[in-house]
Amino acid sequence: MQDQGKTVVKVGLSTCGIAAGGYKTYETLETEIKNNNLNVELKKTGCIGMCYTEPIVDVIAPDGTLFSYGTVDEEKARRIVAEHIRNGKPPQDLLINEEREAVVGGQVRISLRNCGIINPESLDEYRATGGYKAIEKALKEMTPEQVIDEVLRSGLRGRGGAGFPTGMKWRFTRMNKGDQKYIVCNADEGDPGAFMDRSIIEGDPHAVVEGMMLAGYAIGASQGHVYVRAEYPLAIIRLEKAIQDARAAGLLGQNILGSGFSFELKIKKGAGAFVCGEETALLASLEGERGMPRLKPPFPAEQGLWRKPTCINNVETFANVPWIIVNGAEQYAAYGTEKSKGTKVFALAGKMKRGGLIEVPMGITLRDVIFGVGGGVRDDKQFKGVQLGGPSGGCIPESLLDTPVDYDSLTRTGAIMGSGGMIVMDETTCMVDMARYFLDFVQNESCGKCIHCRLGTKRMLEILTRITEGKAAAEELDLLEELAYNVKEGALCGLGQTAPNPVLTTLKYFRNEYEAHIYDRRCPAKSCPELLTYTINAELCNGCRRCAKRCPTEAITGERKEPHMIDQEKCIKCGNCFDACKFKAVMVE
Image 1 (spheres, rainbow, N blue to C red):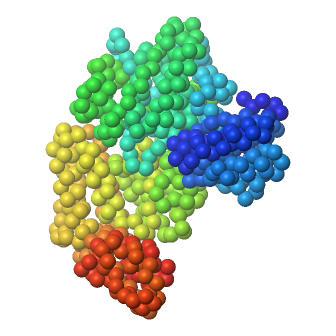
Image 2 (cartoon, rainbow, N blue to C red; image 1 turned 60 degrees about the vertical axis):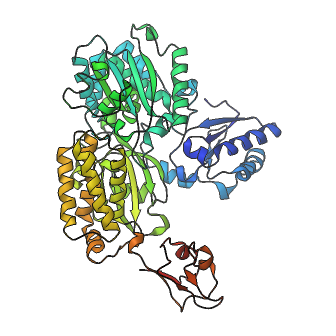
């Protein structure tokens, strides 16, 4: 809580803020505050979601007035201290209050309710916002069945991608008998462009701990495991501290709050295998085995970790639960649509003006997300498509931008909600190459257990590569589609079954680009190097030699102040000349 009469300064120090230089900003502020003997409290906080303008520094006056500053480097930090804190004159050119209101003000933040607000390493600050009130209420006022009923009535569906009703999964696990049951948090966030789970753990780890405790109480489990990829070191550090602090406060361990309920948490660091995001492969990895999917049934609710009844949900799902228990199912269900209740966190990436993390009610349209909260396409280029659901998802074209963001509507387009990654593409993105990228990712990450995924994705990738190189035959387009459906129908696990989605959706909505590559040996986006030709327009070239200096193969010749030429035999189509030219003399065809 903020002390009366004291100014509070907060610095965003999640991964995005740190990568942008947040530690140096924090240290500069710390030094300036100390050197000037200022009555200021300096705090760390998580990511507010505006990753594109990190490091963010918030100055909160004693009366609660917020002044938010973006892209704060060391020099700007000194200005903030000198002009704002010492002299009471906030530097207007650094303020981002209006932009913050445009981005954050239109959101409904439930999973992200504390991210960018509290110090994620402080148990006291979490409790000051109502933290651990939910588990206290559940243990003192509710039976396990009542907790499950509350989650069921809220309409919360699993936020990991499949969208299975959370309360129903809990009930199935509770109904199955076992001398030991387990709660598992799937924090193995492997989709390219996705960082929702990481940001929640970094910004509000206690919410995840409390959500897992509530799930444990509901199903009768005394042990929980968080499976988090080792590439998330900051998330792991903050989660470990949250567990230690909760245990020291008597909120984890034996006989919690004198209720007789006992619950312990452990962290398992995953090695980064994408397939371990699939629940049965994750369980195999937890058991010390190679992460490979198992046949279902039996489902984890029947035989999961160590063949005991196990409930698996992802980070965002657990982060929602404490809010639901405190505020009630009806209040949560008031957001969203009939079959997709509540809010959803999305990671906005790609060609976005405002890349970052947002949380919006289900049912909002893609257009409102991308052009409203996200600010539209970077450099005001033409929007082409948005990839949802990562390698398991699909690509939605501009004509479907008014599609509501809910499980059923997105599935009808051929894409899926997935865990919440949104990658926006503009006119310079080749949709064939985009599909090839995701197939390359899936093929590399395939566990190899079933032939459809192991070889089917390999053959698909080979065809896609030939198409992008202008070497594919006309009949290979039909073969690609046939292979995609065969893999979809025959793969063992959900990851293999959804792997063809990027190909199938781009074939459905951008077939003309495939045909241009095959029949015309042309890439409409001017992206595939093998299909490009670089030339110099003699009328526009003034012989500045900037392009020649950037050419790695000395393919560009010509005297200074005279038009230059490109030797096509030496040209490796790297594009350096195009980037270097300031006079638009380099042409790409």
